[in-house]
Each structure stands twice: as C-alpha cells, then as structure tokens.
Image (cartoon, rainbow, N blue to C red; front, side, top):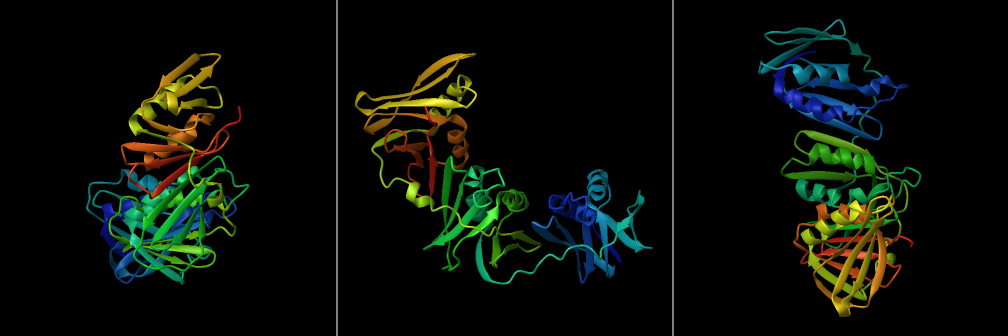
Length: 365
C-alpha cells in the first residue's frame, strides 16, 4: 500500500469513523479502522457489530493494499498533526509509515483478517433529503427508553403512511411522533432502529446537505451518500400499538405561547420534588391555568399562565422533564395542550403544524 491524500480530509474522515469503533476486549480488532486503498480512493471502515461505516477519502493511490490500525492511536495522532496539506502513507513490513514534511511516523498494524465484513444491503430503497430524515429522528429519539430490557421501546420506530414517513419513540411514560413528507410510495411495514445507533446516525449525517439513499433488508438498514456508507442492525420486535392510547379529541384545551410555558416550567422545576413532579390546575370557566410545585426542603411556587382555555376543569401531576424535552422539536411560537380528563395523558401540539405530536402520561398523586 502506498498513497497520498489531504491531511484535512483524512482527519475529518477519521473523526467520523472513530465514533463507530467498538470497545470489545474479546475482539480487539473492533477497536481498529480498516484502511482499503483501491482505485482512486482510500476507504476507511469501522464497526462495533451493531453499526458499521465505510467512508471514502479521495487519494492518489500508487499501490493498493489493506491494513488495520488502532483507532485511538489514529485519533490522537491526527488531532495534533497539522501544518502540511498533504500526507503520505506506505505499508512497510506490515506497519504503516506516515510522512509529512516535518514528521516520520511508524504505526503498528493489527491483523486485518479478523475484521468483520460490513454487509452490502439490498432491498427496498428510499431517497429522502438528509435534513428531513435527521429532523424526523431528532424530533422523537429523546423519548425512547434507555433500558435494553425491552428493545422494541429502546428503538426508533419508522414506518410509511400514505405520502409520509412517520418516526415514533416511547419509553411508556411519554411518546413523540413526527411525520415527514416523502415523494415516493413505500411498502415496508415498519422498522425499529436501536436508540444507540440513531444517536450515531445523527452525528454522522446531521450537518450534511443533499439526499440520502436508505436501503432496507429484514434485519439491516443502510444509509448511502456520496462518500459514506453506513449500516445498522434492525430490532426484531413489535412496536406497541400506540395510536390506541392517543385520545381522538380532548375535553379541555389550552392554547399558549411556548416561551411563556417553558419559562413557567423552569421556575416550577426549582421547587419540584425528587420526582420532578409539578401540578397543573386548569379551570377554563375561571380562565385559570396554574402550575404548582412543592419541595419540603426548598419551598413552593404557583405560577399563573395566560392563554386561551376551554372545556372541563382538570388537575394533573406531571414529570417536568418529560414535558420540557419536547420543546426542541417544536418550531412554532404557540402550543396547544389537550386534556381528556383527570388521570389521562396530555397531548402537546404545535399551533399550525400537524406533523408533530407529543403525549405525556400523568404521575400518580
């Protein structure tokens, strides 16, 4: 192997693939990056067996070859290596020689024979704007369960519905749903991408423009752009039939400004107890919406909120954190809170945006 390439391009590529490497003591090869020099490019591969990535870097290839190098060493080296625009690499006696104008470095290699294959996925394809797909994931992923006991709710559920791609996540205490418009008709029944993998997908693709090609197989999904190929495991399970818990219509509605609601929640949280509990006391006929919080060690607080109220009186307790999390998914200035009686979930919707819905279960008194 012998090649030259831009130091900045390889540095950026290594920063991306390093996130995907594994920390498996029984399979140390997972902590390495596989270099494949072929044709007119250098391909960098990494995997932790749940998710895999191949990133292509333009390079001048003088001699093709393959080598595996520890990812932590590469990251440390290229985080401080600078000054020259071009860096050259050569495989000498199974070790990688790295040369710039100021540095000559020899990196010990790892046997590449045990490096896992990153699968080539074939199946139903979807082409979608990268920004739309990442928006869909980011709008809901914080609602997924952190526990791996129930992998189906420790995942993001994605399924087609007419001309929409629907993203859903829940931890059984709250649920977020985001609909993104697509141009093609899809037939797959729905997929579950593990939460941990979606966080990596966001990091890899969130600052990119253009379209992404998504390919679906029974147990795998792949994402392809001009220079990145990423694969992820799909969970084999059934997502809960969540639509049956969403009330068809509310008995109490509150329309208010998002900023006012957010500020009131933050004040109330100072006085909330160890369970982050706050109380909503809504009396539409009296035009009263109170948020109350009590903490025996801190004190207590009641905040009055202005807004348009209608329907029946309700008193409900909620976990403050579960409500505040959804605000990053809402771009509109106003919100609608829908209630369906005491001890029933609250629905939060942006005014003028039917693509997002957030459900929060009340806490027991």
